[in-house]
Length: 116
Length: 116
Image (tube, rainbow over all chains, first blue to last red; front, side, top):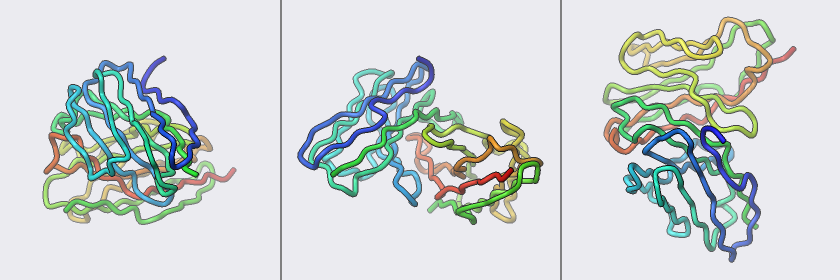
C-alpha cells in the first residue's frame, strides 16, 4: 500500500451503533487530519494531530472521537450519530502541520458514511 | 477572517478548448493558496500552490494559476481541456492565524465537465 489508505470505503450504520473509521499513511508524515465533506458544502476540518498530539478540534460534537496511537494511524470512533452526520470522511497527512513549511496535504479516498 | 469563493459551481467545456475556473479570496494577511482536484471516488490531489514566490504558478497536468493581489484572485487555467480533467476542483486558502495547526479553508468546489 502506498499513500493514504482508509477503511472501510463505505459504511452504513444506525443511530445507536458504534463504529470506527481507520486511516493509515505510508508516507512517513507526522501530521494527520480528519475532514468532513458534505454535499454542497465546503470541506470541513474536524481534527488535526501533529506528532500524535491533537492540535485542533474544530468544535466537533463529542459523538465523534478521534484517536491517534502513532504517527501512521488515525481513527475516528463514531457513536450515537445522527442522519445529518452522513457524509464523506476524508483523512489526510502532511510532513507536519506547520503551514509555514507549505507542506502539501495528501488525502485518502475517504469513507462514505450513511447514518440511518 | 479568511474566506475563499469559487465563482462557478459548474463549468462545462469542450475537449481541446481552454479551461478557466475562478477563485477569489479574502484575507487580512499574506495568504498561501492552493488548488486541489478530486476525481470521483478518489481523495483530493494537489494541483498547485502559491507561497509568495512567483505569481504565476505551474502545476501538474498542464494547469496553472496566477495570483493577483489587486484583484484578490487565484484563477485556475489550462490551455486545452482533456476528458480526464473532468472532476471537482477546490480552491483553498491557508489561515495564517492557525499556521501552526494546519488549518486550510476550502471553497465550495467547481465541477468541471468536459464534452467530447
